[in-house]
Image (spheres, rainbow, N blue to C red):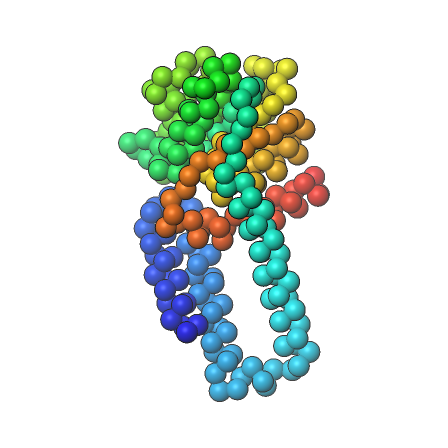
Length: 246
């Protein structure tokens, strides 16, 4: 069973790799598959029983603690899956994602569309679209996202492009500088991103800005949600260390 599941995860990692998004998230599934193969190896021919008892107990405790922590973080992520900001935000920050030659990726377009809907309903709200240009992108994510929103009819004076950030924390830090320069009296900010990413975006935005933060959850592609749900807890743990050791 473990070997069969590991083989399936290797197939799934290839499906993720074939998207050519420029990230290395497919490696997470390869790592999980390797762990399952290792467990299957230990369970064969009585190998597990030959390991010293103290080492077996330590391994089990570490595994239980890791799974428990992972489960708690997943619950926090899911708690923001349907976040919807109240009217009257001063600014919406759209967290960047992959830009293709023909426009935003599906993930990015869903985030932009969620921001668009809010901007249409709240004409006094400004928007900052974030993200640098990756090695496999012909335009920065911030500029590409801005063009997309303007192309859908949002007045260009309301949309600002942040084009230097390469991760979520920089998305928000750089956007906050733009916000202070253009709307220094801002008190309420919305973070528009994919549903699995809202908790993390709100967490960082609250820490960085000290302002009132609300989430705007965009849908995500169901078949690749497992990858995002596996990767996101690792990002949250990393960002938690940033907050603690800042």
